[in-house]
Length: 231
Image (cartoon, rainbow, N blue to C red):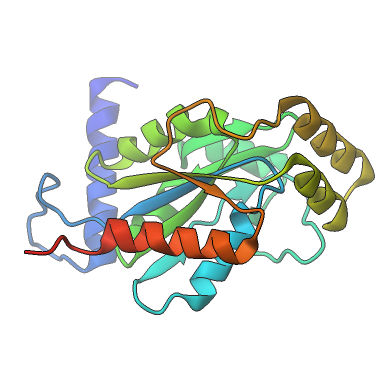
């Protein structure tokens, strides 16, 4: 991307921010703008990260929160729905969006499915609430953080890694169903790559063997990061 393209990209994102916050003609200083916080949740497939965060959002009444919905090329699993679970698209459309710079981050999983993170969606959600964003496996940590910061460098980010015993993860993958070949790939991946602690440095770690304890710990993290310090 040359300097002119970078300038136009920055102007487009500023335009979207003003449009979505109804800032009108007011100037926005990104160094002092009070962005909402993004919580990026990482973990193995079936680790409990969705169960913990989705139940937190049902119970939370204190802070404004929204779920960041990713764009996926995989098929819907039983119980998933369009919009809240994901934007399920064909690969042709995914590539079209990718080529036109719609995603601030995208990646391909070991099973061939692709995941995209839409820039306009991020700006829209940030203008109204804090965000819970699923980051996938820990290998996505550097690229995803860089992608978020490429939208606006001053967005505050909290990273959380969620985990539970390997057997519980594999049982969860089997229970939620889907394509048998894909299920076996996920189970085999967990068998070969699972570890109790992540290799990278995350802001917080949650052991979610007990769902209620996992929800309580995530709630504590939110309280700690969003509650203003005492005077």
